[in-house]
Image (cartoon, rainbow, N blue to C red; front, side):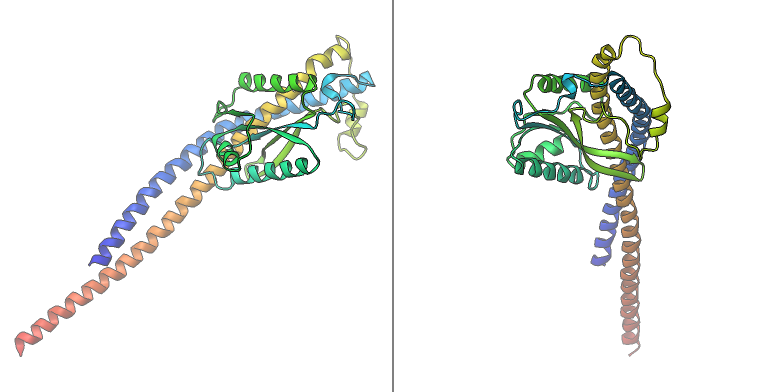
Length: 300
């Protein structure tokens, strides 16, 4: 009977855990739907701004702008800013691990090339990881939780724009989870600055190359004035999109992880129920055998 009682207690504990994981799955699903609308809603804007800037750069011709500069041997500082976007909470499967592995690989690659990394980390999980690795963190961001705000991201972007135009750093990169679809997320390292490639025409093999070649814009005011306004906007929009993609990917990962945990709890409850039934049947058989033995002894 002791074995059956132990199984009952364990089954009860598993059922309690299942309630928790099921609730977390439902919460993650609701958050995912909300973050998905934001991420999908802003992506066309981000892409269109980048397309417009490319058209402007092509119209100007030889573009000269501080945000488009490519560091040369004379003004290179060999300092790189890396923004690593992770979550504040765990229970999201391999989400944080994949982002941190991509960031670590990028850091090793750049340091082997003689670069110095200024590390900026968003999320407690990333900060904990780099502190454990004894790697200094230049700044930690904890304000970007489930609902990144553009105003907060804009201040961060302006900080990096100032550092880049002031020639304190050579480039800015973002290590984050790129949200492709609900079933596909990929850890990526995006180059935020310099805005390389914007002043170049689309490649010949690009599906939209013909579209770009046939499109003619009339700009007012002049393209150079518009570039001064749109280039910082492009950087801010790209950084904001990275935070939105990371948040959406985190909610997807947590939703999938909690669904898997709930399914595993269901399987464990079924297995424990079968074990309990066998233990209970064995106990009943033993009790019946003892009763029959007692009856036979009384007859004798």
